[in-house]
Length: 86
Image: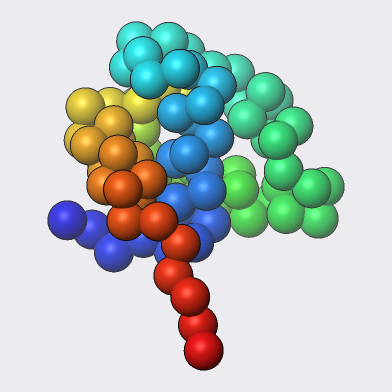
């Protein structure tokens, strides 16, 4: 179980919502980046590559899809919920 930053978790949740849970659906990079504010898109590009290196997403040319590990990790993030900091 890899340790994920909040941005990585958010990217995985965007994948899950855009692909509707299908692992074989390819999402163009532009479609993913459109879900984030302009000031954050450079970081998202970096973390897309990082998630690909971790094996949570698969990359083909300029598109990405969730891997089986990515679906399991995204489900875990959804079940865990948000952390409350007091």
